Image (cartoon, rainbow, N blue to C red; front, side, top):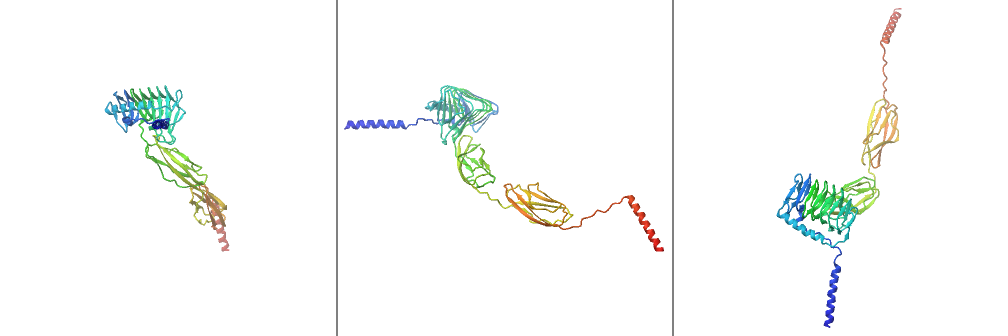
Length: 451
């Protein structure tokens, strides 16, 4: 009995051990402990050399070397320079620990011989037996997990072509990307890179290259040339505003600006789930605009990603109501009475709806001699000199920017006025002749009276 019990207990222990082994994840990629090195944007072993207006955000240090040149014109902000001091020494010791940690993590995929450009990778550990090359864009998809970790184990060198880039999408963080490089790393001109580079020897950034992460060279130099290097930070809560969005109307222009706070600007906005109302679009800068083409209730989620790849989300619902035109008023209600032969000039305007407006005579006829001038977007005019006295009835219609209309009917009783007649103008000869005739007429009249 005791023997059976002993055998059973032994098998039970073996079963527990097998279960424990089976429960271990196949992939164990984790962020290494960086210790004091976590605050360093740049840390070198032998020298830090800079050319041009480089910006370093975070600590800059060197140990055991002592040569730091090019600051200024380079600028260090958000941190201090540690030149062969205890902080730099402690940071280098922690880099050594992190380097070993990264190198020892079990590999999920061996990419030896492949160019990283054009690949989309999920979290994991990726190995290159020798060198690694990036030409174009490498996309790291966190699949909605802000704790997703990406580890690259590179046997010798890491090199990027000009204008290459690494982007982290779907909620990943730049801080969770790590490059363990067996010799040296070189980022080509204008490369946009992310993650912490832990190189056994040296790190070189050529003109215009940027990095959001860390440049940590254990034994060699870090060489900079007009770069932007910023130490990444852990993700914080990112909040999108406003909390709700106003309703819209079918066929009516809609504009609303979204903003974000809590992370590191700039932010990039996108729709992560659901659908916008047809006719609306969301720009990367957060402007939601367009003209809705379908009525209904639309629910969607907007994601705001910050400069470190951290993100926040908010779900919105927009109600698009059927469009109903508002009242458009054409004024004045009545027009002054015109008089035949007297110049006339009267404006007609509109209010309500959405400016600008267009004006037209939609019915009837205006007084003869007047012209309806409708070239403006705020008013129209009746201009001219009326000539034919009678009653005139006509309608003026104003159409706004949404196609809505309003009208006003006018009745004008054109009054008959005295039309001035121009006095005749006589020449000097005619005046002399007229004078002689009047004189002769007077003489004849006198003679007739004497007789």
